[in-house]
Image (cartoon, rainbow, N blue to C red; front, side, top):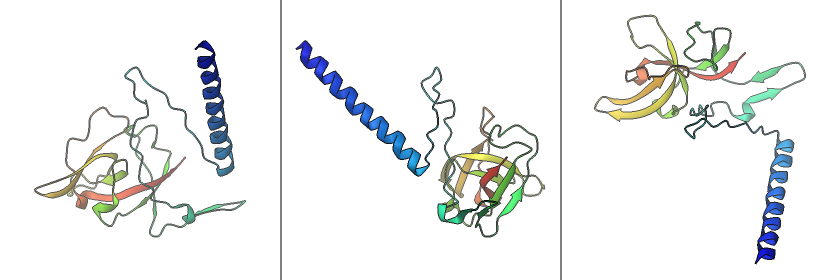
Length: 170
């Protein structure tokens, strides 16, 4: 029985070694980065935020020796106030790339949007969508800054959304 357990342990370790080696070699050839996951004392990731949608497809990115070209129709560059609400993803020295979303169907939890909480004021808030729903007035989303403990406390309607962030450059 003891020999069987030792033999199974060796076989399991060998299989695990093959799987890990393949994963590392495969990621080297396809340039896939595997982020380090840090777990907090509650058993979840410190960075447990939903990721934005894939707004920029690989075929839209062209890389040359002296430049990078991203083919995005109607994109604009955005700058940010020093509010710290979206640290460490967005801060005042970041350059954002934004587009105007065409419909609520394009948006998903994890997307970072710029919205006007009060359509009468010229103020934009840039926060991440944490929830999407429908009620008697139609589509809405709930947003929250990544560096803020509470959500924004209001339902954001599609007509309040001015832009969706599709990239951030530092």
